[in-house]
Length: 338
Ligand SMILES: [Zn+2]
Image (cartoon, rainbow, N blue to C red; front, side):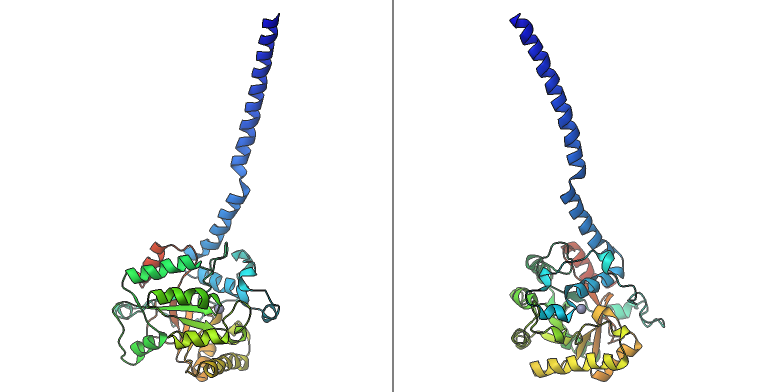
């Protein structure tokens, strides 16, 4: 009797164990399949980085993120709205179709550079913010930025200023054997707190392209920081007054954006401000003409490539973004046709 009960109990337990196992397998599979946080994170990263594989769309993406990071003046006036607190929207939402980056000049000023031109080409890196923000490729964590500088240093690069680049291209100046120009667009405060001391460890200096309306704004460079960097050998260039789409405002407004920002920086720094970076990389013959009239001598785009002397107002730059990897950075600084 007691043996029979034990057997029944045993069978019952076995059945229970089987059903439990079956339930476990079923639920285990579904957990494994969905795993939402991980897979969605991956897809965000993929989505953000995907455009980078395309020659031009990554550049559109870069500056659109950029606009997203800090374009509205009212956000500056509300305290605490630092760039890091703003949300990075998925790239698909912020691509602005009117940006004519693929062919800004239908006449086609940019042609395939010849071997001789390439031999004289200089790599010009461009960064934005040096601070961590999940999923935002425009913000490179300081540690990662330091690995970039270390890579340059280990490979014998010497940072040169845009002044030196200008002298080399247009006035018979001499550059070191492996020159590199390091630039930062918009003027984030972390360029001072992070990029400045990190670059200094390697004896490097950079150029900040500052949007003058954003000076002293939350998350942006302060007047005294700009002065200190300038006095330490960094160059400050203009990135307009308010970061507009220069192709969607009047010629008078373009003139104002270019001249007033130049004057504001020159008054602040006590030095000439000769270089200018186009917001969103947008340029066309009118914008270039206005840049010349405002007194600039070089204009930097966000078109992929190395800078060559052929067109001082269409200098190309190398886009640097979070998680690009050192191999990719190396590829871009070693090959003018990357
Ligand atoms: Zn910008």
